Image (cartoon, rainbow, N blue to C red):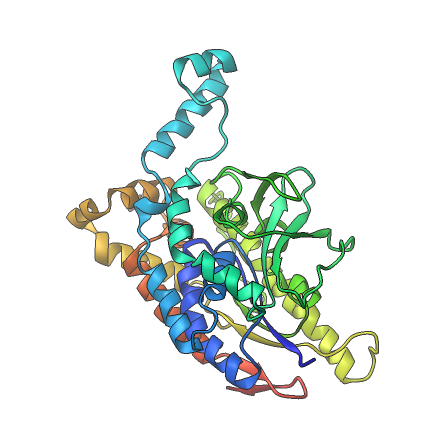
Amino acid sequence: MAARTGLVVAGAGARGAYEAGALTELLPRLSRAWSPPSVLVGTSAGALNVAALAGLAGTDPETAAAELVARWESVRTDEVVALPSSAVEAALAYAGDLAGVPSGLRRLLGLPDRVTRLLDAERLRPVVERVVDWDRLHHAVARGRVDAVGVACTAAATGGTTVFVERGPDTALPPYDPGRDIRYVDARLTPDHLLASAAVPVLFAPRLLDGDAPGWYLDGGVRLNTPLKPALRLGAGRVGVVATTPMVPLGEQPATPPERVPDVYAVAALALRIVLGAGVTEDLRTLRAVNDLVDRGEDRRHQHVATWFAGPPAGRADELAELAETVRRREYGGLRALRNPALVVLERLVGGAVPDLDTTHGAELLSFLFFDPAFAAAAAELGAAHAASSVRPDALGRVARA
């Protein structure tokens, strides 16, 4: 059997539009150089992207990727987060916690029992239902056009990763992986699986899933943001990887002045970078280190797995945050903010609206939550530009300029 091509797409929030843009370059090149990806695995927004591509199976790669970008450009802020109602509800719940109001009294007063999230992700459901052609996805998997689609989630009960897999007749379900604490579960994928994979801790509430592995689940990026290993276990022999963070570590960065204590926005931005970026660096570096050992004949237990990465080049990790700030000022600065009131509230929640303070971290947080046609179009264009300069492996695993 010829080696399957896998596609792994990392979590990204609203930056998923950037990933869609990167796929306009990567997907056609993967298909020409190797074969159309048939093992599709993703986390959070990456799960939405791979599910949408599975629903476009049979469409030529250029058209499929362009359609994916168009679907991202159709999403608006108020379709994703209910602001300011979500913020008000969270504030009331937190006030009840501080005051020690009993749960029974809160329910009597119509107040939330506990603070379960800052934003209401239920509004995402129509978006997920619209972006993914679910009937075509199921048909493609059943007919073998797509071998497997995997959605990575984190189990709230155990902290381990659960990969929900819709697979074709020729794909075996991998056994439990104790080394990485990854459990594979057969599933007929639904919008609930994607909403669970995208349930960023604190921002969104965990999702309750039934089926073969009932329980509460949240963002898969907590443990496995770039699910490379599941793609390999599902039969991929070579893998394209899309992410919104560079493949290499950031390295030395300017130190924060000692008199400036990192605020909650800086810490939140750091947390998202770790959740949505650290896995990219770790897994790809590990895989490529193993490849080097295999190529030198020092590792006979593994086979060489070619990888093709599309994402920000080294040293350009901040461009998406800068782009979010630029688009926000251009499209919604001043009185133009009235065109998108939800964005005004959102910007204040992430600390990007105080003019005499450093808004860098607020802009970075905004880029993860900026569901907007103008930002999606700009982010997709940036993703395509970055992917156009990516490198691909040749037959021996060395890299050659594409």
